[in-house]
Amino acid sequence: MARPQMLKLREVLEEIDMSRAAFYRMRARGKAPRIRKLPNGQVRVSRRDLDAWWESCGQNAA
Image (tube, rainbow, N blue to C red; front, side, top):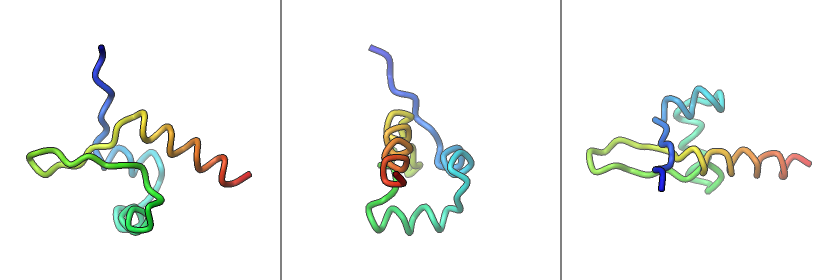
């Protein structure tokens, strides 16, 4: 079974065109894609979670 693609926070922020501060404000409200903290403290977002978040954004806009 293939491992899910994990994106760096920088890559996610570039894709969604958002600042780090805005992302963390959304996260505090429970509106951001799920993040995973690695043992070394780095943050990753799975491609699957980001795609699901994008889909939910489209549904909420309708």
